[in-house]
Amino acid sequence: MIVSITLNPSVDRTLFVSSFKPRDTNRVERTETDAGGKGVNLARVAKELDGRVFATGFLGGRTGRIVQQTLEAEAVEHSFVEVEGETRLNITVEDGQGPPTSFNERGPEISLHDWSALCDFLEELYPAATYVAMGGSLPPGVPADAYLILQRAAREYGCLSVVDADGYALQNAMREPPFLVKPNADEASRYLRREVKTMEDGLAAAREFVTRGVEVAIVSMGAAGAALSSPEEEYLARPPQVEAVSTIGSGDSLVAGFLVGLEQGMSFREALRLGVAAGTATAMTNGSEIGRRETILSLVKEVQIEPVDG
Ligand SMILES: Nc1ncnc2c1ncn2[C@@H]1O[C@H](COP(=O)(O)OP(=O)(O)OP(=O)(O)O)[C@@H](O)[C@H]1O
Ligand SMILES: [Mg+2]
Picture 1: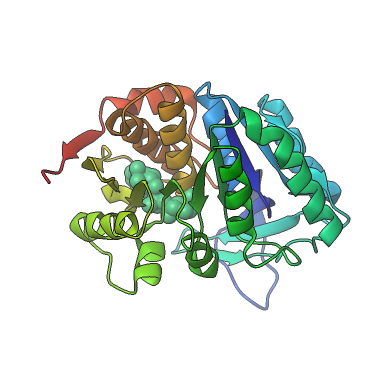
Picture 2: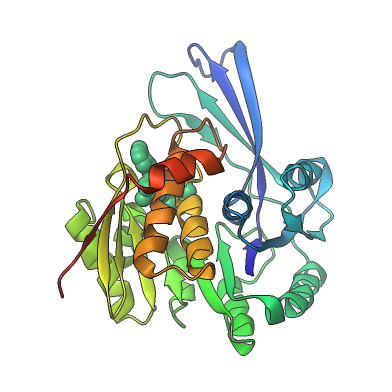
C-alpha cells in the first residue's frame, strides 16, 4: 500500500477572466474548483491506476470538506486529522495572456496536539505500507523538520519514504536520504546550486541525489520528460508531444504512476514509463484536474525510454 501524507492540502479555485486588471473589478467568465496538495493529487492518480493507496494529513473547515468530498467521490481511502482552522484556498487567475496570477494562503495553524494525533495515526498505517509519500509545503505550526521525523518513523516499520519537496524541506529530508526524491528542474537546481536546463543536466542532477544517498532519483523536466538515476540503472524518459493545458499536479502524477508501477512489480524502467505517462496525462487537463486512467494508459506506449550506458 502507498500511504500519501499531505500536511497542507488545498482547495484550488481558478478564475478565468478575459483580461486581468489589478486594482479594478474583473468579470469572471468561468471558475473551476478542485482539491489540491501534492499528496492528494498523488492519491487520486494512484487510485485512477488501481493502486492501493491511503491518503492522510490535516484538513479543516468548509474547504477541508471539499477535499474530503473529492476523495470520497473517487473512492480514495482516506482519513485526515481534523484541525480547527480552514484548509487553505488557493486562487489562480487565468487570463490566457501569459502565466497565471496566484494567491496562495499559508494554511491553518497546526497545534502540537494535531501533529501528535497524525503521528499516532500513522503508526497504525505503517505496518501495511510499502511506500510512504510526503510532499508539498508545511503549514504553520508543524516542526520545520516534519519530513525528517515522518521518514524516521516510517523507516522503523521498514517502509520506503518518498519526498517531493522544495527548498528547506528538501534539504532537511536529505539529511537522512529517503528511498525516492522527485524534484523538478528548478527544485533540483536550487538544491544543488547549479543549472538544470537540459535532460543531460537532469540526469547529472539525479545522479547527484543518488551520490548523496537516495536509492532512486527522478528529476522531472516538464515537456522534455524525466531522468532517472539509481546505482544500477539510469534512464531518460521522453513523453509524446501533447497539447499541455495545465501542468499543475504533473509531478505528483509522475510519482503516483511510478509507485503504483513498483507496487505492481514493474521494473524501474516500466514504472518510469507509467509515471511519465501519468504526468503527461495530467498536463493535458485543466487547472488542478488530474489525468484519467484511459488517457494515461493510451500514453504509456508512446513514452520513449532510453537507457543510459554506465
Ligand atoms: N508540457 C508537457 N507536455 C508533456 N508532458 C508534460 C508536460 N509538462 C509536464 N509533463 C509530464 O509531467 C511530468 C512532470 O512534470 P514537471 O516536471 O512539470 O513536474 P512538476 O514541476 O513537479 O509539477 P507539479 O509540482 O506541478 O506537480 C514530466 O516528466 C512529463 O512527463
Ligand atoms: Mg512538483
